[in-house]
Amino acid sequence: MRSIFLLALSAATSAFALLPRSSPQCQQVTIPVSITTNTLVINVSTPTNQSELTGLITKFTSLTSNVTKDDIQGQTSLNATYNIWTLLCLPSGNSTPSTVEFAIHGVNFDHTYWNFGGDGSPYNYVDAAIKAGHAIFIYDRLGVGQSSKPDGIKEVQQATEIEIGAQLIRYLKSGKSGHTFSRFVGIGHSFGSLQLIGIVAKYGDLLDATVLTGISPFSGGLNTAVAAFGLTIASQQNPSRFGSLSNSYLATESIINDQMDFFDFPFFDQKVLQLASDTKGTLTLGELISLGASVAANYTNPVFVVTGEHDFIFCGGNCYQSMNGSANLIEPTKVLFPAVQTFDFFIPANVGHGINLHFGAPEVFAKIQSWIAGLA
Figure (cartoon, helix red, strand yellow):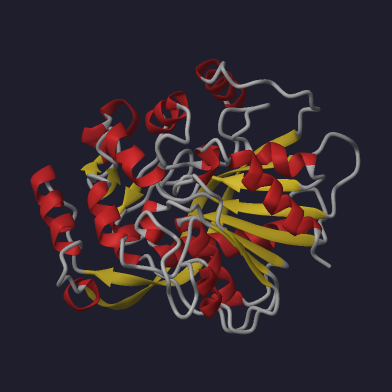
């Protein structure tokens, strides 16, 4: 299945130059992940139609909205097991690299955010990690792609996905993958970055280093960005792809919405925008209501934050606004990591929220790999 999908991606992106390289060794495994966590009791019913959903989104994004007060009624314990689709790739050869990167994608994508376009694509972050001599572990988050799709309000929430991520890191550390690694570097994008923050906030130094992309502590543009998604009941937006999903699963309405939130015009290939829109992932009402960031007080390892200059979701389209005494919105992310001594950030020019899908992606990949290489 994976090879067929990558062939389709390659055909759709035939303009991409193929780079001479050795193909990585990849193993695809669906892992049953058992978790116990506390989820939010959300006083929102699954919308019966699009009009009801639009009313909910309008309520959530209004200037006087208070979701915590109006729609969250405490917490409840969740004990469950989910099937999570994963892909572990290593450089060609017989030896296991010491470093493995653990990658979590954000909303509107699945695992292919990290290997977009297939082998040789300039948008393929997996290639960059492999060329740096690292292994990399990517997966479809709960509710997305080939992973389990449980209740989109009660179960597919941030706390559930944080616990799944932590269990998958432990899986890699245990050697159950058949490989023994000594350094574990987390990398996330957007909602995936929020999950990494949640993992190290809850479990401290479970990771040896953390790379956060598409993130900032600025919330001033979030309501506008969520409204710009044009959120639609996923089964109605694309019946052929999402027809079996509950109405608690949502998708952006059109390619116009995808461009608004994720792309910085004109610094991207129109074919990339089209492919990203055609293969988009979903999000759930539970994710939308539960997302947030906690202070990782007990995490002490290095952090690198990379957010595009024109990130619409986390910078309102301009990351060079002043905040907390800084001339930009990215450096203040340090407030979430009070015990971290090594904190660095990079704001790539002419890049929007979907960093990996811009012309500037190779530069970003090189910066990340250089930062990881410079760690003690």
